[in-house]
Length: 394
Image (cartoon, rainbow, N blue to C red; front, side, top):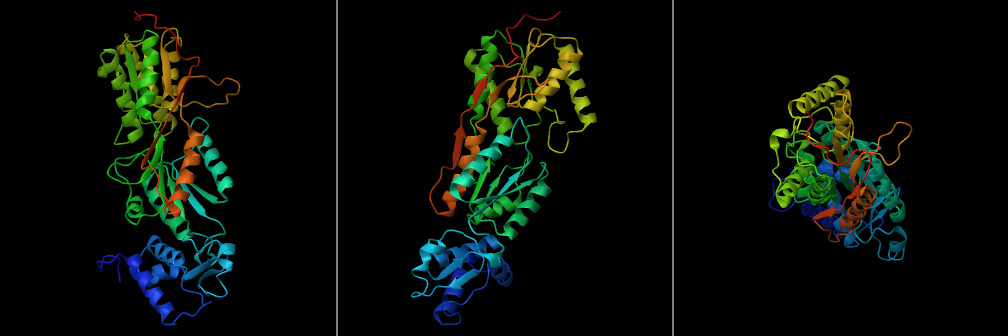
């Protein structure tokens, strides 16, 4: 039997079948019922579907999910007083040892990667919220490879996670596992970006407003010929929004956005592309571009690693930062040791983003409404890389 063979959703079919078996005494009070994994195999459905059926049974106090033991038919006399102790009769997910779960809610976290410039404090925020809410995190990295992302999500669902936080891989197409979770209404929160056409809760930076603020900061320093540096947008919402904010800032000031000064095909900073030969290729591209366009007085880098490429290109040409060329970017390591360089940058609210992601997954688990899209402000942090425009170079 498959999920598409009946007009009724399969989780309702499983719910009805198990409830009927309990009512006709096939399963008696105190008996263990099949686990999520066993039901998924029996009905040939995903564990998202079987999990939801068990939630509905628990919400109606038909079963009790006991940490470390499994799911059992509720005994009105024996389990009534124990419901509060187990905390599982309210329909929330919980530790069901037979299903491979642990006591307390288990949240899977799928990230492309993380570093000091961006990602580490995002995890700190999640960890803080998890401690406060007495839940557990399972962190997996995909390195921006969509096949890894799909496989990782499947493995976490097989593990029995109660919800997921996903930082989607860069790319034009969202993976089928995410779409399946949205359709099944599995507790899912996306971070850092949105996926077009997918009605999933997301938490990200207000990239349009942040990019506007960064560009206006350069305008106020007298820069009018600004080169935007980015990877290919390829429908990646964060990149597209920053470009949109950059353009809107120009329109608001009546300054022409000189697209011929842009480089939008830098690829060495993309996940799984960070190799020496790719880095050197992109640095050389920026150097040649700067030589061909001497009117450029500032670079607007979409991300921190691209700012590093720009810095290398400028210094190799014997130019000075910021006297000859200014650089502004998104994100920068908060703690620098030795020769660390302080870029002027837009600092994203990483910790708040991480905390909200955990809180929203837990809210979805309890069937509480959450905002479909949350946009957090970024903070402009002045650094060593920006200064007053000195005029065109000869």
